Length: 347
Length: 258
Image (cartoon, rainbow over all chains, first blue to last red; front, side, top):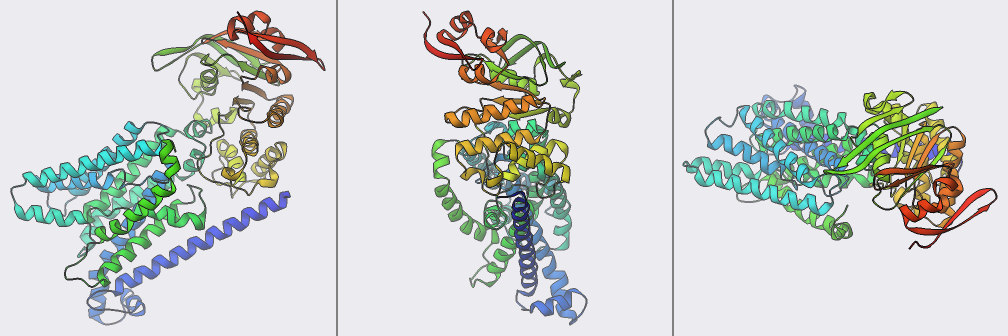
């Protein structure tokens, strides 16, 4: 291979990545339009576009812009931050099985939020909710990474994650258990299932600033992930402040996941699945995977949220239930694929 | 001229003193072999010199105290090649080599300035890895991967290269290959410090040897002298067959010392 060939093959790879990313953008836009068009009144993507930009009937304008737009924005933003968080954690830990939900971050965030609700400290629409969720998520990921230590193997991370999510689940159950008000308990139980239903612009205002802040932090660290492919020590020798990077990633994930959980409850497995879906298209470079993983996450959650509105059933299926039902078999498939690494105990 | 010095270097890891009062002074253009039995503190010394672990004492590189240099500046002065050549993701070889330009502000291997691009290419040509620039490193053989790792370190174009057992688990041909590359770097004015257990390779390629024993620097000098019979007996507890071939020292570990 000559020197020119090196440049040419690099360019071809870059072109392939760019077209894959564009295709993902198109997919997300299409799914967003479908999401805006689906419900008791079905609208074509064209009618949706018209209503969005102030055309069409008043009724369709209200339906699209006031009822369905918040739900779609949340689906898009939360799917994206979950996909991004998954890709960032996988990059940080150099581990294809890392994801917020396997580490107990959403479960802990849910506990934080539930505690605030049950103690009557705040109503469901105050900023206390996302703040509590973010603090709990930060605490859980921080504890997990501290327990696992540097260069932790798959097995340690997953066991520690299991312990933390079990603890968060038990703590949430305890809060519900001790709660005096059965209506609050019911409300919490449904909220925990994870749903985008009936969300308003108030919810968007509650979650979006945190999600955007989390995304900005995670994206700002992207180049360090590539250096980290060589291990923490080598990355440090190349000038990466690994300790600071860890803290930034934990903070970004906590802000994003906490903000998301505060308005939708726990929606799991998007962060695990999204990076795996885009690796065949983009390659394994952890820095390049961030944006496409965010897009794939957005597409996944929008698609799941469309599916729960289409699947005929007597009562509504919650989108968090659906993502788990799809996500867990995928997780099992990944465990099978990573069997060797898991058996050896090292990543 | 002295480029890298350490004065009374002490390192404690997990409460145990690993390095005790190590002082050294090394100049550019030398290939230095850092040898010693298992657990003598070789890797620890390498890490301390690169500033990867905290240490007591004063390390100076080109006159500047290491502790006063920001991470990025340290990274420009030390190319660090760890043991094992681990790469966690199946990235193409050229992206790995391009990571050597990270200390110089290159964040995207697809967007290299002409200067960085030349440095990457020089490094890849020196280690003869241009032909598999597009292959994933995880698919390469051990020997090929070690050359890619070496190219990554050369691409930093740092004045000091610290290599931790770069020849471990390589076949004889690739061992010579790696040592020759490091020798060439030294001949081009780089200070290369190589940790190795292979006293034969150390004697053949290095022009200076540092012998560590139980955290102390017990002997140093030209390999033939630093690895004297007494040092072999006391530090390594072996007897070696010694001779000279093509005016280089030859040391072959032969039997346990009594």
